[in-house]
Length: 118
Image 1 (spheres, rainbow, N blue to C red):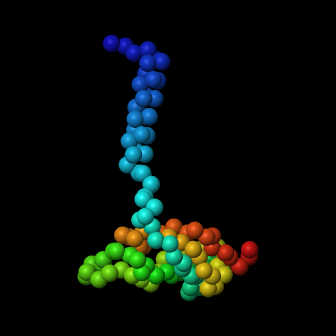
Image 2 (tube, rainbow, N blue to C red; image 1 turned 90 degrees about the vertical axis):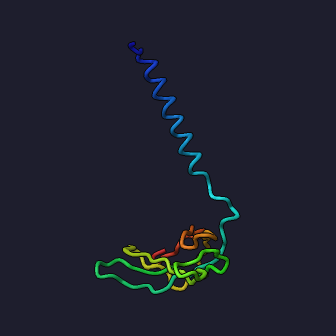
Image 3 (tube, one colour; image 1 turned 180 degrees about the horizontal axis):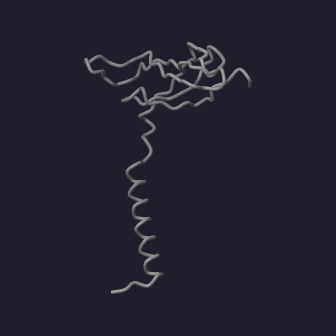
């Protein structure tokens, strides 16, 4: 049985829509109650040999429910390292962020990091 071109296109369109809907259902947004809001600060700014900068964003995770491999609670401080950045961040700046209560190393910045040239 031969399909007409328009039927083939319609079939592929339906397949893509179904795949897209299924993918979207699997990646629903994280429950807002899973996030904890806090502040971190920029520390340990170092120039690199290639002219870029490295630094750390450090924050506490006091409300974390995560447990490490030896059974101890993960409360921080947590250090997120940035490498190869072309601009030097302003030292000791406070950055609002949120982290996942069950996985505190997963975070989202709520403020932009400010740099020397800005």
